[in-house]
Length: 201
Image (cartoon, rainbow, N blue to C red; front, side, top):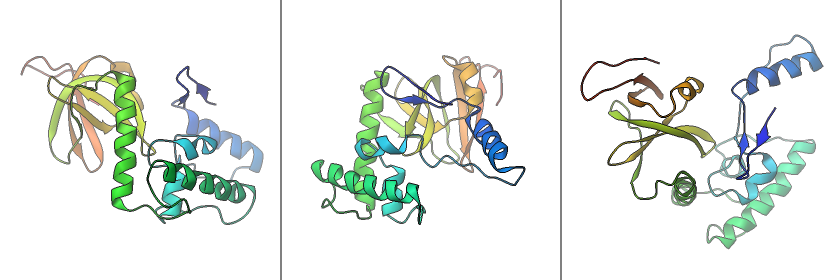
């Protein structure tokens, strides 16, 4: 269901959740199932991840972890590895512990720096889309940070991160404007210097 790119990142297809749900229903029968992506990174890669992971959120009480079973044992072992890695970066004491706002910010900035190096946009400030505020630019790519997927939108002065949606891929490289409202972005494509807007998502 997933493929690994040359840079080590895993590409999760747009129909991943549908396929996963269908596989579970085939295995367990027609029951009500809810499939949620807890982190776009595979569990075994999270100890070394430069960014806030599901393991970090579980340790901080921001997410629920498995109570028993093989997954619980694996998560516990990887959580210990994660704590040691964080200590080597100067974050935490080496023991599994919750991360405060300052530590999470450090990890966010580390992940942000890595993504900007990958995208080749280190010369411009990176900002998140703000609730109710309009932004514009060219849709460059998508980036996975903090367990979420963001659209990377470049303008002349900055690079904006906005919540990503699959429909954006058909408009890669096109100019757009957007407004973040209630955690979702209303996108309009085809902006041309103040003239009419084209495709609306």
